[in-house]
Image (spheres, rainbow, N blue to C red):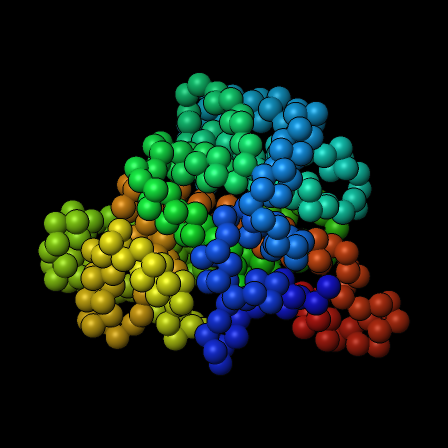
Length: 357
């Protein structure tokens, strides 16, 4: 499988692609798990077909009993109050088991098992947040219920309207990916896959690559936007913009590759009524800074509107990106460990670091 088949960015035309399809188009047309399955397999199924795949995955999950190990880990981390939210998430993620194949050395992971991992993530987020009683595994039976439980894990409440429900669905798909192997999380997952390590180890490694210069920037954008959210919601846009821009850097603005982030443009336009205050703030900050809002500002806008904590916002970003990371894991795992045959490796070993990933 060619790396650019999974996801890539057309710099000349400013288009993000998943499996050759415009990310904006599939985000606008499909539910999140349909797009996640498309990212994993290249097969775009309708919602009814995806719901059946989810039901099959749930039946198989019950047979593997994912609860016992997770429950034991939840009890352990609750006895360690000094753990951060990020540490709690990684420790819970380390206990995710969806197939007996995970115990086998150098065993590949298939798309069905990847789907099971994704289906467990709303539950893992809920347990990450909860330092009290254990939360039972929710019954995710279809695409809509996955989105419902995902946002319930983040916000503690259901969508207040059909428009908000739709905006949440579109937002999740916008975070899938589109930059190929140049992003640190993807590169880290691929590097770990090249060692034939297991998929959960690769995901934890990828999560460790969500520092403030990469995906983790969204956490700081949420923090900055949270400090002015009252002014934003009251319509005091100039005051909010001045406070936001008081200290550099300005999280959520500028991008190392994109001139303007099409994900922000699409979402603010598509859900104009919901996002009007944040769109106005973005314009004011752009006027002050000369920089355009990026996906971190989009995430911050959605999370601040729902009063989601910065660390949870980062978890949401990572989980929404997970299908692409799993697809890259599968692709890299199935290739030669060093990206070259032994014969070529002996001749060209000096170039290995360039070819490895």
